[in-house]
Length: 223
Length: 223
DNA sequence: GTCTATATTGGGATAGAC
DNA sequence: GTCTATCCCAATATAGAC
Image 1 (cartoon, each protein chain N blue to C red):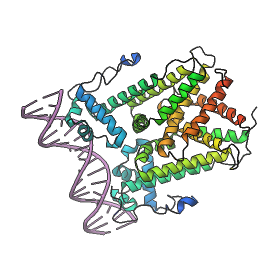
Image 2: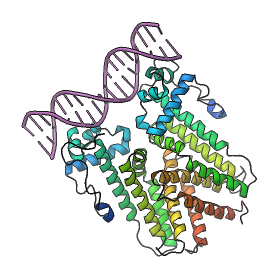
Image 3: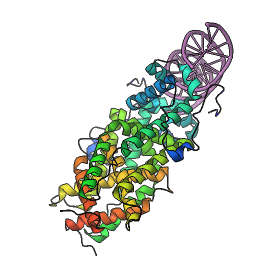
Image 4: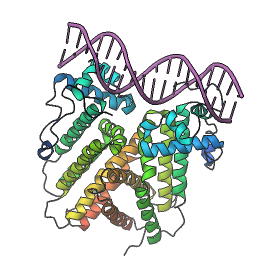
């Protein structure tokens, strides 16, 4: 629990001004050994869970020495923070790549629904998030990083659904919140019990409901 | 990881026929010491998370001895399974108590929405579930218990929404899946970031969407 | 920067007295 | 049934050689 590593670069720097720009890739700028360690940690997290994320396991998976973790990240907490940063960055990049412009209407809605389905199917990222979440809830710095991730999610979806001066802006913001919640919640049921939880049918119904409410808001033409 | 405790009552029995009846309270029938231990474990899980759920911590919190855990539950895994059972039972009881009969229509929808909001606000149960979920995903016996819990959730909500011979039965089942997913997903955003995630507005929009689709299915009269 | 070796802590399990 | 005392092991952290 000591906050100050005794030597080495220790905690990753550049949180202060970097966040506003949101251009830096936190892993890109790391020395190769540190990247190896982070990649190994990510694999272990997805494959075996947070409990299995021990320094020895990471070192073995990365084929590096245990001590190198202390050198590069200060301590285990530092490594976990760096890991969360890399997961957050990855998640943002994947969602932003789907923000391609369509005119508002049928095409854009299709792209959004397809993206949603794809995210529910991407088990790895979801598993990583599920493993991290309980710890993030209890750790200030992790928590704010993950909270920022969700805020960005919402902003991106809202951006897909509307313009800033949209008269129904507030309601579309709520719709974005609902969509993100649905992706998470359906992923839970899907991971637990793919047979009994019919997520495909649920998503189809959700699409119908979105059309229903968007028609009310007269945002799109639907058949 | 040894499956067979060397002495004592060991693993809780009566899964086979008990499940079909679903009347037994798994904690009610336990000796007082075991109940103390389970209650203590539940408090620690909610307060400090799964990582903090050590035998020493549980013994201290319950004011019992470490060895008593081995006696009553075989080993730590046995205790965790019993803990999950008790959480599942508690969750079922709380949702079943809300299944009071209203005629299909406005009243019943109101009761359902109120229940949903109340569950999102019940942070403790959700936190406990979040802590357990990642482990449940990786452990066969925990997984099936939690999966059963979700299946029961869906059945209960579906029961509130319809009768067995409802012509729109399949779609109402999907609606139940969506509702459960929403409760989980909104809880995540709410726990992470109550300020930026406006769950109240999101739930209000969800209600509007439900009315929209139920009107299409001509299930209820809405103003 | 990277390693080996080690100090220290804490967890889970259990023997054996009562 | 319950306790104390102990064993074994895994994990983190770090000193110090290279």
